[in-house]
Every structure is written in C-alpha cells, then in structure tokens.
Length: 569
Image (cartoon, rainbow, N blue to C red; front, side, top):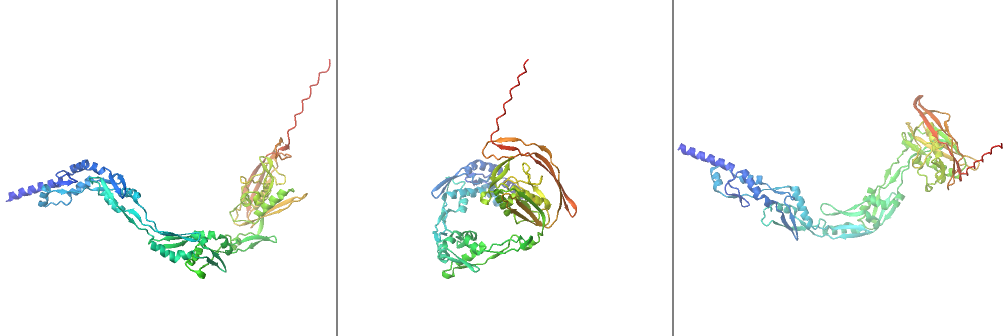
C-alpha cells in the first residue's frame, strides 16, 4: 500500500512539474497550436505566425469613406508574452486539473498591447473624414437688428466605440473593419433660441436706451449697442447676453466726455513773483463695466422703463495737492539770462520753446530733457525756419535758434548744482554765450539734459522777451526749489588757438560767415552741500574755428609778374 502511494505521489510530482513548464495540451491562439510548448517556444511560435498577421494594415470603412490603418501607427501590437501568460491563467495544482492539462483543449484570445494616445490620434484622423459637427443655434446683433442661426443636427463618429473595434480587430481574417457614425445633436437647440428671442433679443433691439449719469442723460440707439452685444451659450446650451463695456464706451466716447469730468493735477503757478500751489481737481468717470451692466439691465425692458442709471467713480489726479506741497518749491536755486540780436524767427522759435518749457515740474531724481519737453521742431508745432549750424556751416532749418534756450536752461541747471547728464557745445564759439558754458540741440540726435539730484522737487520757469529792430531780446530760465547745492565755478583762458580757413562757395543756399579762431577752454565747477564738497568737475571744451565763408566763386589767381630783363652790358 505504501509503495502505491509513493508511486502515485511521484507521478503527481512529475505531472505537476510538466504542467508548470509547458502550455496545456490542446491550447490554441487564433487556431495556432501552442499546447505542450514551453513559454519561450510558445512566444516564438506566436511571434513568427501571428506577428506578421497583426502587423498587416486594416481596411476601415466609415459610412461612405474608407481608409487604411497601420496597426503600428495606431499603437496596436500583439503582446506575445502576455498572450502566453494568459494561456497559464486559471491553472490549479489539483490532480484533475493537471490531467486535463494533458488531454483537454482550450482557445486563448491573443492579447493586444494598446498605446492609447496613438490609437486616439488614429481615431481622430478617421473621424475627420466623416464628422459633420452639429450647428448650434445662435443669435447675433448687427446694425440694430437681430440675426438668427437655426440649429442643425450633425454626424459624429463614436470615438470610444471606434477605438474598441480597432483594438479587437487585428485578427479579423478579412482585415476589414466597419465603423458607424451616429447623430450629433446641437448644444443650443431651437427651444433655447426661441426662449432667448422672446425674453431678450427682440426687446433689446426694440428701441433706444436712455443713459443717465448724475443730472445728465443721453440716448443710445440699437445700432450703437449691437456692435458690443452678443449671446453666449452656457454649459447647458442656454443663451445668455453679454455686453462689452469697453467697445460700447468707445462708440459713445464723445457723449461720455460730455458727462465725465477728467481730474486736473495739482500744479504750481508763479503769482506776484512767488510759487503758489494750484489745488487738484477730482474727476468723475464712467467705468465701462458699470456702463455695460446698466445698459444690459435696461435692454429687456420696454417703453419709458428703458433707462440705464450709471454711477460714476471718482478718478484721482496723477499729482495731488498733498504731493506737490511736499516738493518744497519755494525759492530760485538756479537762474540764467541770455540775450540775442533781433530776428523774427528767433522771437517765434524761442517764444514757442519757452511756452513748452515753462511750468515743467521735476520730481526728485527726474531728468530734464530739452528734446523731450520741447519735442520735435516742426511747422505744425509752431516753429519756423531759422539758421542752424550743421557741419560747421550755417544753413536754414525749422526751429533755428532753439539752441539759445538750451544754453540758457543748461546754465540754470549748472548754477542750481544739478547733475550734468548730457550737453554738447556748438561747433564754433558764438560770442553771445558764456565761453565754455553753452549747449546746442538738434532733433533727435543732440539733447541737453540735467538731473534733479536733490531730495526736493523743482519748477522750471522760462520767459522770452521779444527783440525789436535795434533792440535785443532775452531768454530767462529760473529753477524754483529748496536750495540744496552751493556752486563755485572758474573758467580758464583760451588756449591752443586755431586759425579759420577762407572758403568760397557759389552753391545755392550759401550763408556767409565772417570767420573766427577756434580754441580750447576749461570750465571747472565745485558743488557743495552744507559746506562739504560733493562734486569736483572739469569740462574741457574744444571749439573748432569758424571758417570765413564767402558766397561766390573763388577769384582767378593773379598772373605771375614778367621777369625783369637783365641790365645792358
């Protein structure tokens, strides 16, 4: 009896060992026998016989369209290892199951590995051939009238079902897969359109809306509202009105300006020779969102109820009274005057430049730029032709003479102790300017700039007194602030003189020049604060000679004198 048990036990062990290392007999995958094979042998068999079949293109038909789908491109691949592993699934170690593994039969479905992003992309490509998107119903507004778009059903490929069909059809003998498309319903239905027409769209364009701002009011016609109005569908397909406040306000700009009050900055004016603060003025403006909300609320109403009451908001000025009072603008800290001979163009150009500069306020740390403040010198901006220096020669140009304002402003900043940021002396020296301490400007290349490097604000005052025949004009620039810097200056004598040349010019536009020597000069400036020296500067200035320009042709050279004959013997 014990011997029998030992024989049965040994047989069981041998049978169990065999079943663990071999696929159960009678196991097939797509009709291919792999029973009795080891896992490695089974994988090799499936790879050789099923792999090529799985890699063949699928012929896909969608409605009336056909396409070829490459399984590899669609992310579909036979997973031989997982398929063989599935052949072992469900096995147990009881004797009956082990015996069945020797004599039973079993069909195992091949396992397909799916790269979902690639499969989704392949399905999307197929859907593009057949999808006819549903047309949502809609309402639009144009020229004060309502325009309706009727909803229409569409056709749409069921992407989830299509992906499943493709991933389970790799071993269809015909290699043919048929997919179907179903109806796609519009999100915005006819019922939604009809409801929006009745409740909002039709009354919205039925007449004007009266907009009331404080005590003032104006009317807005439907054709003025419609460019900013639209109906937008929510997630449930309900049409909701939206009014673009910025677009509506832009169309009503002129009328809004009549009911709005723009803020006015606090400023400083000179009264009785002293600075005086002019208080700020608050503004009242209509915010576009508030305008849109009020008008939108009135659109569904009728008759006299179509009134949109808009509340204004206070708008602060950029420069408040409190801020300007803290600037400490109370006394003259830098001043300079230059004079000029009579010329009508100088009166005009210097007067216009003074008008633009006068009243300029500099915060602590601000830089004054003459080109920025005065702007481009053009006829449209009030400037006229005058003489300018270009390439060492006088010629006519719009804005000629403005350099006198640059020189005067430069010296006012110089004596205020401000930082010299940029200045350029004239090509040659002009005798009405302080030697070495003058500046020229030319739009846009040459500028004159100084920086208010003090803890106080500054006000720039510029005044031009007209010249007249036989009477010189003048330009005065004063800088008002709180005294911070003390300035000492010294100018050297002229040295390294260079003689001018005589040049004849018979071309049109020639301007005669008398000519003067060029020279070098040094200007020193020491700047103190509370008696302590803070700046020690030396400006080395080089003036080119002003050539003697004679307008006309050069004279013919004198004939050489005849040689004196020798005395007679």
